[in-house]
Amino acid sequence: MADRKLEFLVTARDRAGAVLQGVGTGLRAVGIAAAAATAALAAVGGALTAAALAAAKQQDADVKLANALKSIGQNTKEARDELKEFNAEMQRATAVGDDELQEIEAILISLGKLEGED
Image (cartoon, rainbow, N blue to C red; front, side, top):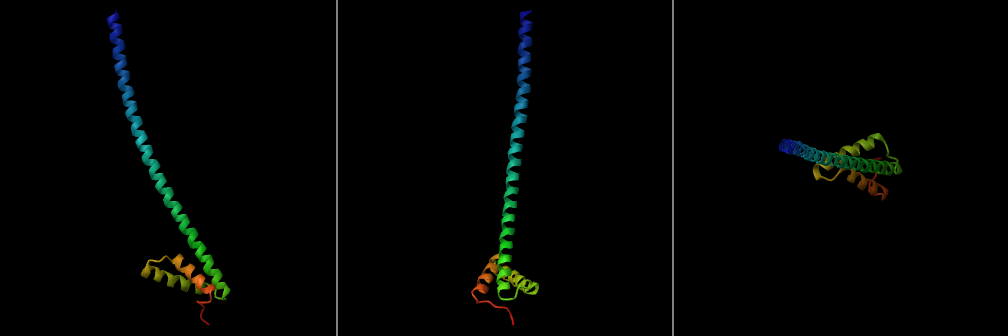
């Protein structure tokens, strides 16, 4: 009887060990998947942050240029559209960002080095 009891306990221990080993393997897989998901979310968050910063920089450049154009009486949609088109061509030709070109234009206007057509 003691042998059967011992055999039962050993069998139960072996089965429990196998189940726990399977649970451990499953948990490791979940941990790996969670780490991959975290990395993916971090990458998306980084991309969104970069996009938001670029949009804010562009908006700042738009405002600076509009204010500079206003200071010389040229803040019209037509003037802004012409400069936007010019800046897009310059960006393609030089790889300098249009927001950077706008900031330069705003500085030149404020220094009196760039004026509108009369």
